[in-house]
Amino acid sequence: MNKFVKFFETVKLAINAINSNKVRSLLTMLGVIIGVASVILLVSIGNGITGYVTSEFEKLGSNLILATPGKVTVAIGGGNPTSGLTNSKFSETEIKNIERLTGTVEAVTIEATDSKRAKYKKNEYYSMIYASDHNLLEVINYKVISGRFFTKAEYQSATRVAVIGNTIVEKLFKNENPLGKEFTLDDKKFIVIGVYEKRGGFGGSDNDSIITIPFTTAKLLFNMRRISGINIKTKPSIEINDAKKSIEKAFLMTLTKDDFTLFTAEELLSSINGILSTLTTALAGIAAISLLVGGIGIMNIMLVSVTERTREIGLRKAVGATPNNILVQFLTESLIISVIGGLNGIFLGYLGSLVLKNFIPATLTLNSVLLAFAFSAGVGIIFGTYPAYKAAKKNPIDALRYE
Image (cartoon, rainbow, N blue to C red; front, side, top):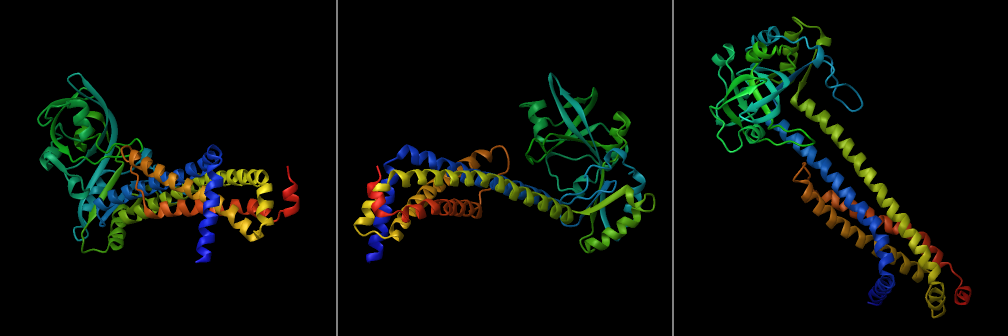
């Protein structure tokens, strides 16, 4: 019981000392508050983006193989993921060769992209044009929630039809139902036949600002002949790596190994998550620097406090306080400052993550909170040790003589 009494007495003395200099204590805590909030916010952003990317790839399915032009390495510290797009050698010949793999391949779709000015009445919007074929929804898990997607007959006859994203509905058609409405892409007339399910986006990208038209139509009207990707859905009964080898052989019938790169959705996800994990750790490390600055602030203020309270230390030692008692008292003050700062930083980080969710994916996790709080408490102990040790070593007679 005596130990508990001493503990609470030490805490009481520490709190009284902190309260005696409220403004100075608050300014000292500020570095810890900012550091903890920064760590929580940046880790939340990293976790949120990782979760978003993972969910997007899960929608694609585990039996998807993506072919991109050129030799590409998606890995930490290497490769250029767009190195082959400007010199793509992909053609519809590769599509036909892959489609012949009836025992391995379920469906194949192509993609070509460009940016065009979309216009309806007086409303204009520069949109990403996604030219593909009638198999797109079978391969990529996009959903049309209103209307329909274009048919094989419409694809083969290069019909001027379009399926649009939610942002296009808002920007071009305002409050009107877009289905059946005629609009233009660079002055070429198209009819809206479908609207995609809202998918969202982050970091300046908007998955709802696309307009999908038949690739045949894009070739005819806009001379869009460069295929930027081929997506292949394999049969679930076929092991994905075996399917990848068969598809590679089909590509090599007309291309060289340097003309294309094949990724499974899982390989691409693993590489991207590795990059995001490294980025999240780096961001947390950068934010932790402000915690270290806060720790230096704690040390500085505690050293000033030791100097100011030299006579108090002498009096306490004169009435029986041991160096250990003095050490624990000043360490407790330092710890309380960092813990209170840490708790306020957690609250600020929580509020910040709620605000960020409206703009980018941000996921607050218990691990990030505990990590930031433990780090702030550790900073208080580490940077408070030297001032506490200095206070404990003071000679009581010299301390009592101090003016």
